[in-house]
Structure formats: C-alpha cells, structure tokens
Length: 394
Image (cartoon, rainbow, N blue to C red):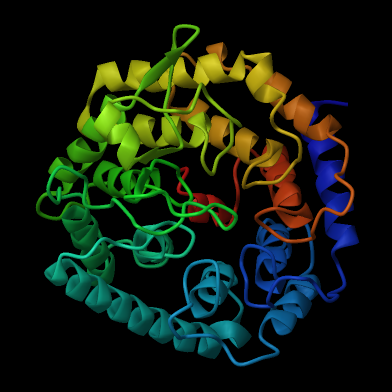
C-alpha cells in the first residue's frame, strides 16, 4: 500500500471518529479548537466529492448554536471570520444568506480593526501581537480576504496597514510589541520582536509576499518585505552550517547584539525554522532574490536532516506537530529549486506512523481534525477547499 492509500485510510478513520458533533473544550466558533474548525475537515471531504455534506452541516450547526461573535475578540480563528472562512468553499444554496451576513460582519470587523490600528500608530504606541498577527490579528483577516476576495479593496487596506507596521520606530521595528509572546510567558522587560509565523512577523511577511507574487501591490509593499527580511537577516544564526532564527528577540538581546536562544528549537509551523523558512522563501520568490532562496532552502534542509530537531516534534498537530511540518514542507517543496533534497517521503511516513497522543483534542489547530486534513491533503496532492490558506503556506 503506497503513502497516498495509507493517508486516505487514516483520514477516513479520523473523519469517522469526528462524524457526530459532541462537546469540545474550545468555544464553538473557534477555528482552532472548536466546532468551526472540525467542520473544515468535513467541508474539505465534501468539496472533494468523497463524503456527503451531512457531517459538515451538523458541525456547522454546532458552531452556530450561539450568537456569532463580531466584537473585539473576533478574528480569523474565532467568531464571524472563523465561520466565514469555514463556509467559504461550501457552495450550498442554503448557506448563501449566512455567507452574506458573515461577509458583512467580517468587513465591519476588519474596518474596525484597521481604524484602531491607525489610531494606535498615530499615538506612537507599540502594537499588541493580537493587532497584527496571523492567529488573532489583521494578518489573519487578510489571509481570509485573500482567499475570499483577492482583488478587493479591503485586502489592499490590510496590506497598506502592514506596510506601515514595518516602518521602524526609533531603533526598533514597528512590530516590536510589549505584549507577552505566549500564554505562559511573561512579557520580557522592554518588549520583544516575534519572528514566528503564527504570532510574529513571518505571518505578515508571508501575506505580503503571497499577494505580491500574484501582482497585488500597494505603495511601499516591496519596501516592507525588504525591511522584514533585513530584520530576519540580522538575527540569522548558523547551526551545523545551516541558517536558523530565534523565535523571539528581547530588548536585552538587541542591546547585546546576540540571542540567548542556544540553537533551533522545535521545527514547527508556528514558531520554528520551517515556518520562518517558508516565509523567507515566499519573500525570495516575490522579490526575485536567488540568495535568499538558497538561504531558505539551506535552513529547511538542515532542519529536516537534524534528528535532534525532529525529535522535538512530539505530537501530530498542525500548529506545532508533524502535520504542520508536513504541510509546510510540502508547500516549500513545490517552490524549491532542489525538492529532492527535502526528505518529504520520510516525513510523511513519520506522520502516518505517529501514534495518537493521549488526550489530544478533536480540533483543527492542535487536534485530530487538523491531522485528518493533513492526511487528506497527502492523499489528494493538495486541499480542494484551500483550507490551508489560514496557515499562509501557499
């Protein structure tokens, strides 16, 4: 049995396990862990023509059993934008009124977030990560708009905001934040610069580069890509002859000119070398920079051929596990000059053989649904519904 057949059987098993809605720990409207994210698995299978729509209907009904969130906490992974993202590929006549209402809600949310960011910029305050990042901020809303309305004015406004975000404030980049880099981590004295894909500047870099590649440009966009790349270049380090970047940089590290992170950590989509390398590769393709392309490929190759780094992957989730690693490397390989140098077959085999983690949640970002979607993508070459647009990989 080849890898595709095995992946298809594994994906079907996950889908069967998640057919009937049941209470989950995350809020219903959470794309990351709630019913909205689990619906993505069944929508993908239905749009691919290998499953009926009933399971998708049931999970979407579970996701909308309460009033839809359109307030301050609404973002790509929660509330109206999350539901709009999930519903986007569901070309079912019965969904059209809901889709229209959600689209209007997302537009209002995005405009409100842009207005708040503009006021913050005018005050000269530092941004919270949730203002601009992929998971909770305007980059995530931009990722949805890129999929839903790729030529729309609202996406251009998000890109223009990201251009402003990259402009330096004093000696520090404009995205330097005083908020905590993680739920269990205190805010470092003087704030920090976050380099990751999920919560840091690699997310905006990916969005700016992906849109630039297809010819959507706002004034200053290429300069903004250059500023982000210059920052990452200044923090590039070497591990066994291959590049890597620290997950975060503190004010003390800026003043010392060195990072306290001893080497590359978990090779994840969210914070690790694979996600940052993919963003750098996209930037290289957008700007026609062969040197940066080689740097990104060296970083990815070195990471994937280092068993000590790979041993840090201990679950099979999209966010920080093997599913996210495989999705990232698959997207990377499609644009690589030497894809044969990437051990994709070995990685996919490891994903298929990975045991279930005891107590793993059912959701999309850190649980079974995301694992099932990655398996389905392996079986079908690429997602039919473009659900991976929320990861900004392609």
